Length: 97
Image (cartoon, rainbow, N blue to C red):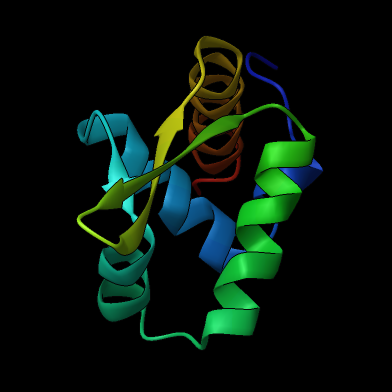
């Protein structure tokens, strides 16, 4: 079967985070929180998981005195996500009746 199953994308929140980063160069913490409808702690945990896997990059800056945290997908992360989607697509095709 083509593609590779990746446990990093097993959780729907992480799957949605990577989906967002595939079509956006970067995305900030508060926008993720609003779009995904999750708590700060829940979102931070999923983002840390993807960062540990080196699938996303974190960029912390200040806008005036206000901290701004942006996230972007790494090349490795985007490739892994694409391989995961390929795996899922092939799984669906194989199981059609």
